[in-house]
Length: 427
Image (cartoon, rainbow, N blue to C red; front, side, top):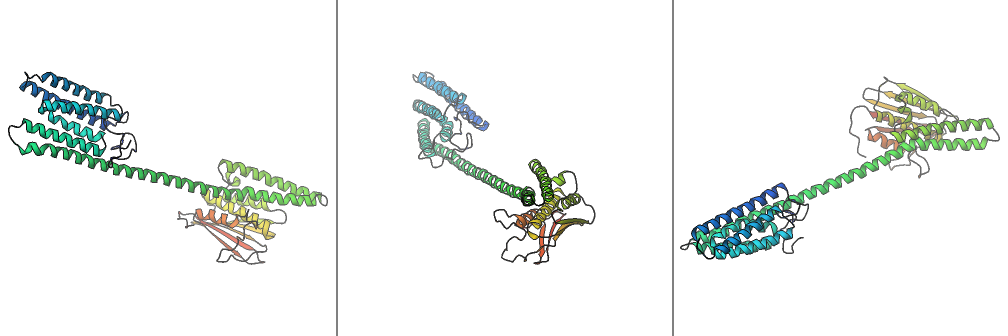
């Protein structure tokens, strides 16, 4: 617990941390190896000084009637100090032991001034256990008593007896307070670094989660959502033609079932590793695009595929992005453009791969500088992902998207991805 007058005690940051209230020679179960070594050193120094003072007194005053009291108090001091080293106990217990030791030492010094220099280990123990102001007050009292004891032992006036004890006490106190403040500043810095690292990690997790959600939304839109939309259109057409043209209705149902089966494969692949099913079967991008063109050639729309350039093995991310781009573009062509033919053209160069998706549909006005409505998107704003999803996917790979269209003359979408490492443009 922080003492009200302790304006220099460092905060209790962690058990056993330097300078924290839980650290020190008497902290229960929280001592570091250095704490234990320092505590043992202080105890050893106190016992050695105590034994030296007792031996001096016995040699010079062996016949004194005070000798039993001096020996008894010396034994009590040694036992209490060694017991405190063997079993540190709580911080409160350490302060109680310090009070007992100081009281016995004061009595011994009043009886035999030669015990005065046993105060040196007591000064450091007091600084470690007590709040700073209380410790300074106790150190001042101990230094004063040492001065009086030295003056009693001196044959005449000696300035060193008057100056040496206060100087030693002041140096010990000043060094300890300085080290305590430095430990506090270091601990604050460590706490700030740990907090900053945690905040940065949390931010990165949030950004990663958001990016993954956006990626999943694009994957689902370009695979499952588009397939469901096509199934819905086919089932509606089958319902309208069920009585008038059963053969056509059955054809629509079979096509819808085929799309549903492919969508199921896509869903399973999304769950597994989110790779396009056509690519996951081991086919390259060219074969996957040819399969897509064949599957989408139905209901009045003919899709052709053409590949130019060498048969280059593309990175998985690039191949997946271009296949998803083709799927999204064809789904929008079928649903919105009224086109009868569409063409997929894959061009592989040494450092670039490009995909052109062209149709002969109704076209649309070019987007204006103010950000016109997505021309390839769904007119329903609650469903539309089209162009923004395609553009975002390409941007993640450093690619670009270009669209050319004129009303009544169809449209051409060109997706380009560099094959050499490139820094993606800023979003």
